Length: 213
Image (cartoon, rainbow, N blue to C red):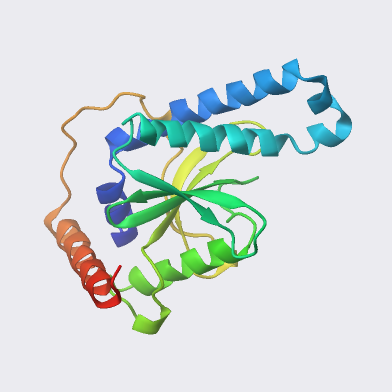
């Protein structure tokens, strides 16, 4: 198991991943109902921006998933670097997650400032499971919840490479194909994987202490 894969499994276990597909499916269905019921949203220019309605429905779905205890994570709304709005950030103990629509699951989403800053954290933390250069570390490791663009045909958890064009350090199998209910007792990691994950957690804890995070 790759180190990034082991770390992501530790932070977002299978029982949590099983909630992703139902949340997305409900959100896409809600967006379709809203669009169908509102003539204004059926003009050509609105249809070209259908993804906006989907995005808002997906954000609402994951916010409610956390608020109702379906996910044992926290969330916050973070402002973009340029003051044009906010995005949803979901926080596991040692990981932050954001949500993106992408046309193809192997490609990173559009290269905007907040995503660029977050993916650089992965380059610092993950290659050797410790920061290569402490000055580069600006936050926790970052994962994306990826989902299909106009239609929901894939969903993945992925940790982006530091360089936008290089895709992902690790990307999960299509979560739409996994069972919606998984056993409460999940198989444990191999000893080497567990040791690597514990080492990374220790490095993150040290960074938090040193930087008052």
